[in-house]
Amino acid sequence: MRAAELIGSRVVDADGTQVGVVHDLHFRLIGRPDGEVECELDMVECGGIAVGHRLGYGHAEMTGPWPIPRLFRLLSRRSLVFGWSDVARLQPRLIVLRVRRADLARRPVRGEESA
Amino acid sequence: MTDWAHHRFTANDLLLDRQLVDSRGMMAGRIDDLELSDPEPDPAGGGSAARAPVLTALLCGPIAYGPRLGGRLGTWWAATGRRLRGDGDGYPCRIPLSLVARVDRMQVRLTSPRELLPSYRLRAWVADKVIAPLPGSGR
Image 1: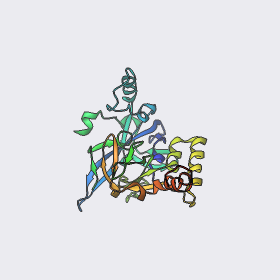
Image 2: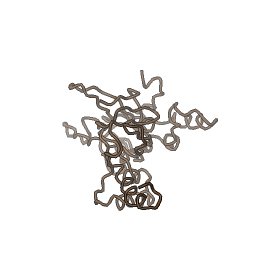
Image 3: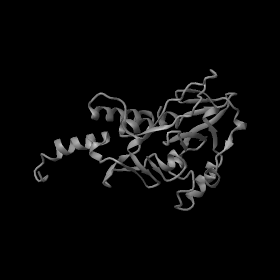
Image 4: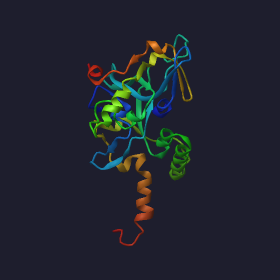
C-alpha cells in the first residue's frame, strides 16, 4: 500500500456521514522484540482543507510569512483524527469507518502529541 | 538502524517532499511517496485490519509523484516516468528503510552513495549518453 492511496481519500463514518478528506498520516516509532524499530501508522488525519498541510503549515514548523501560518493553523484545528482500528474497510479513494463522526478526536497539537 | 529525529511525526512534517542526501552528502532525489505494509486482515472477520501498516520504504520519481498530483496531470506525469524508465516496471523507485541513516526536518540521509540507488539510474543514463558525448564535456 502507498501513502498516496490514503492521502486524498474521502472518509465516511459508520452512518455514511462525510468526515472529510485524508490530508496527513501520523506515525510513531515502536520497538520490536528483536531490537529493530518500526515506524507504525498511528493515526490518520482528515478534514476539509488540506492545502495548509501540503505546504507545511498544519503544525508548528512553519513560521512565516505573517499571517499565513496563523490562518492555516486556525483552519487545521477543525481536523479530526482516527486510528487504524477505527477503519472498517478500505476502498479505492474511500475509507469507511466503524465509528461515528461525533466520536472522533480533534487533531492533537504538537505539545500533546509528543507527551 | 535509522536514527529518527522525532518519536512521533506526520508524513507531511518529516517525510514527503524531503530531500534525500546520499552517504557522501550529494543530492540523491526527493521523497515523493511512502510505501506501507499491506494491512493484515482482522482475525475477527470484521473487514478491518488487526495491525496498523508500517513504513517499509521511501518512493521517489515521477511514477511515485503522479498519484499524489492526481487527475490527468498526475496520470500523464506517471506515464512519462514509466516511459523514461524503459524496463516496463510500473512500480516507483524504492529506497528501503534499511538504507536510511537519519531522518530530520531538513533532509533524509542515506547510507548508500547515490550511484547505487535506483532513483539515480535516469541521471546516470543522461550523463553517459547525452552529456558525455558533447564537445567540452570533460571526457
